[in-house]
Image (cartoon, rainbow over all chains, first blue to last red; front, side):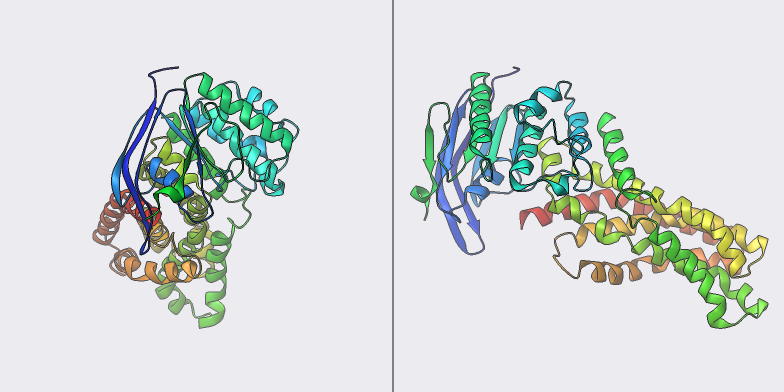
Length: 195
Length: 220
């Protein structure tokens, strides 16, 4: 990998409407570390991820990051009317990915490349989003509920990919209310920071 | 450069007539339908048609440019494409500029070509057609830019966005229409030059206005 990556947040607070979801949240992730963000629905897991990704401004506090970031959330960002292979190829071209097939095989998508994205099931769509993540070759992974809709086998594959990613010096922040095996088993319970 | 070509290829595949999304022929058919119905509505007197036909072509071009607006940017925002581009460091301005080019390519050249049969249908002569064609060439990029700006401003609206964008385009397009269609009565280059100038200003503003609007919609 290139430069060691890093993700640090200090004294973050997030406000949605007139509600403060969390405050005084600080976290630091060095290369190779992973953390699971837990908490019931509506405690701000997705908002935290969007703040860390720079897509939303925190109410207060700041985020510092070094390294390239990737995001997987409930929005697929694949053209619904295109066959999966061509929809993924758009991102592969942008990301300069040359070995897309390995990722597709790991996520067992190689048989689905001719199927239009709109016909994919929930779990298959999630796997497609993870394939885009994998082929992007980014250092910091921000994953919002990556296990939703996945069967046991695919869940194992995701955990293996996360271990591989962190083993290679990457960072992963995973928001999930389901148990997930992460290197280091660090976790951050969002309700602890609720105002 | 590779980012530019990748974006443009995707946009053209989605927007050009005959592409996968299916309804992209509609603006062109709409344009021809207006030209075809007009003589039935006002009657076949050649003098009346010749005097008003050029203006009708302009109005038809404007309305045809409104048709694809609700699908121009909103689906990409809803599906998370803009988030993914932002994470890759691709500015919203670049995406909007490329989309503007693709949007113009998807209706501008086709409407200019369709102006030939349309001019026959509304019975305007060669000299007037010449001014109409030059005017459309100068004015359609401006119409595309207005469309992109409106589409990006209405991007966060769940429903009613299409109707609202149609209403918002109309006042902004009035200057283009006045100078573009106005050049028909004067027959002069002054109107065409002004149409071109307005278009250039709009095209220059559109990526920045559009990019800012899309970022503002994301914050909410």
